[in-house]
Image 1 (cartoon, rainbow, N blue to C red):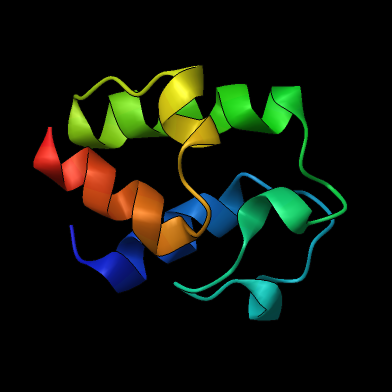
Image 2: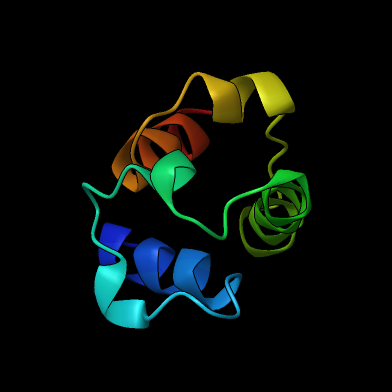
Length: 75
């Protein structure tokens, strides 16, 4: 999966944040809708789409969507 597709899938986990707000450089934890349930949704999406596991620590250590993407593809 390419970065652009990852950003799109990532954005789909948010119900109220406009898709236009999501770029590879988006600091996702600064989004108003970000919270623990969204984090769990992202973890589940990565597991389903990539068959890879990310942890809460992985998410805490990522600042942007691209940071998380790079972590996922490196696993």
